[in-house]
Length: 515
Image 1: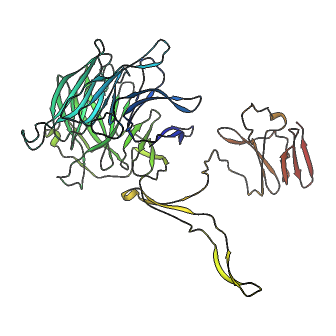
Image 2: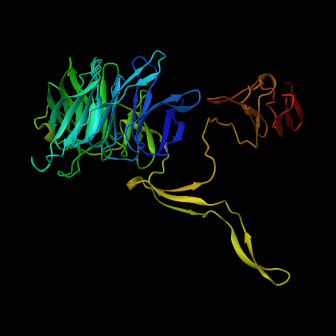
Image 3: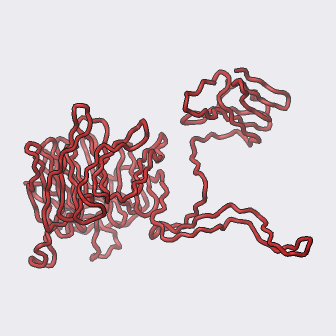
């Protein structure tokens, strides 16, 4: 696995800040921030039998390992935690769970030097129990709580064809350092994911339960509200609709969720609430994009979709999809059995903005040279001996890979070399006939600090009857008129001299720009 940190640049194009090879399988990722801190930590669960906390070092451009907690054997084992991670929204504790039986809860804090500290693991195990999802609930500054979808299989077959699934709430008592099973609710067998709802002063709290074809709002002491999900018009009635990923966006006095189905359809989910009581759940069709493994709504008005199969995409919000006819609410008489159909359309609320290439998954690959112009012929030398003579040019071998899945499949050709990125663009007034790059000279020259490499700063563009001098900065390219070069004549040659001065060779003479 590779762990990458991506960040939009000034033009909101995705740039890779750092990329490291993990030499293992990353099973889960979560971020958290301690109360009063100004940066996030990264919580990583892998097949190493360890939970690692990383911090991004902006000075060295590396991930620093803050803590490493060992709790099991290596490998993706069903009873070794690491498959699920859940973090308290206030950053006070975290829960790491296995597929079966084992759960550990850790208290996160900091010392007098503001360094992260982590407690010894507190067990929350339960035998004969399979876990399907875990999340941290937003309870403000009360004792941290975690929700889990569990299923006990010790009585399988005794109470019907399917074992009963439970929504279990675990509470971490910070006063006595103890984890308890606070509450359990019976839930539908098709429940498969959990979405935490903002709590405290930001919302009513609780959790949204994702089931086949519908969503349900659960909160202890609160009536259950169920809302169906709009379906595609051509989807068979017997075909279920599952949620594969979700993201939450929280504004000052408003929040909403974006969830994606296994068909790639995005749905906008909102709650009508007052004083901690939810009166209605709304679910409406938003847009359709390729199926992602995770989506993230950025505060700058963009949506990032990380795909397991194919390229990763960045979309810009054109609208919030408030006016849509395909909407279902929990007030519908049929509740979770309501049927509201829609026809998929082209993007309306989202605009494609950028894309990151990804070869995953590679289904087949060949290494060959299809661009070579070399040919072999038989020729006779002066003595009458025949020999093989190779003519033409070879550009080296290329890698031909079949990647992607379904309609996003592609044949990609990889060639050895360096990729180029566009740093800036500037329109030219005509057709140039010469181009020169020059390092800083004259009044613009400044000594370069030790350890840094001096780069070109000027671009001299020669036309038939004039010369254009461009200045290259970190964010753009623009014309300058005070470089000292003549503008009304073409330039045959330009360079910087050893004394940091510059010369311009023209058809009528040579101009020297003193240092």
